Amino acid sequence: MTSHGSKATARTSSEARAVARTQTLIKGENGIGTVRRTTLPGGLRIVTETLPSVRSATFGIWAHVGSRDETPALGGATHYLEHLLFKGTATRSALDISAAVDAVGGEMNAFTAKEYTCYYARVLDTDLPLAIDVVCDMLTGSVIREEDVDVERGAILEEIAMTEDDPGDCVHDLFAHTMFGDNPLGRPVLGTVDTVNALTADRIRRFYKKHYDPTHLVVACAGNVDHNKVVRQVRAAFEKAGALKDPEAQPIAPRGGRRALRTAGRVELLGRKTEQAHIVLGMPGLARTDERRWALGVLNTALGGGMSSRLFQEVREKRGLAYSVYSYTSGFADCGLFGVYAGCRPSQVHDVLKICRDELDQVAAHGLPDDEIERAIGQLKGSTVLGLEDTGALMNRIGKSELCWGEQMSVDDMLSRIASVTPDDVRSVARDILGRRPSLSVIGPLKDKQAARLHEAVA
Image (cartoon, rainbow, N blue to C red; front, side):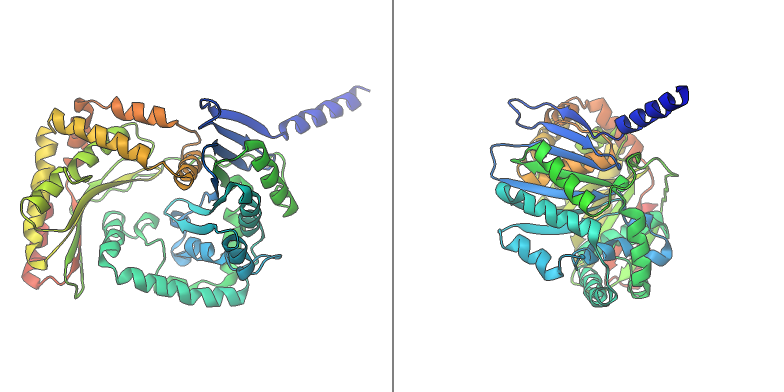
């Protein structure tokens, strides 16, 4: 009797743990902007943000896998797989997938990054069930046929060629390699011609099974949506595919810290017969979880984030040395990058580099005046809100937040964090980041004497 009671208690406890758990993470006014999360038995997380005033919805699935998770032999596998999930499932052909969304005027796409992959569809709110069914089918039921792998290989090689034909884009891949070397963060997301040619259907299938488990996925949906209906439809789609196998499975945690890789004083030049030279001068930045990231965001805005920024004024407005010049930050789980980009005539490379380096050194040593910091805070607050004015941006925000941080922050909280940045915070992060010895990447037709002088910029 006692034994039987213990078994019954154990079953009851197990069943209780298997129940879907729903939480309201952000409570909006009158339901507007409310963000809720449900964790299904099987470890699948579903987050939604409700915006009843619109007539659209964006549905996405985020996978906890990016090019950083690839071995050298698997270079480009994450991006290759992104392509292949559009090629067909057990119940839909590639044409069926695209035609279903096209028929309702929707948009469907995907993107691969260093630490995550996202698949999404934007449709009218009344067509959301269709989008859910199609995208969930793609993520859970891809067949990855040998013939599709062979056909798509050609498309990916063309994509690599297209990127290499755009030096303004390619220089950022070169800068990642300059900073991280032959490390997953230093390799291109697309892979290389050699690695893509070496990938087989069998290898990609194993990669798919390993990284597309429900515990590695986050479903995100924003717009005129009902959270409970989205949960029911997603659960039905995943259960139909037999994907929620283990009711005790828990979601994978956000990426933890690893050894931060930092490189200083390196110079890489890629000779190309281009009209412009494309340069990135930069140094290690901050991990995406670093609390100083808000101050770094203000610093980045003041330095190269707009037409009134220091770099734009000094390089373009006052001297006309470049058409495009800006600064940027990239944050990863354990490290980050801060970079300054400019495209200029090859004969002007050293002048542009000197101006950029002088500005960085000046701000590192003396900081920014209060009025520039105040203007940057206002600009960053405005651009943050304006960048979240459509359902696609909202879906991206809640999906990435859940996958990368495991939590959600309201827009008001984000604005509050930006507004709370002080001049001392900005000056402190400027000393820490800009005071480091930079590295440099250049693509262009530089002559030998010009190339030899590049090391002066990082001395």
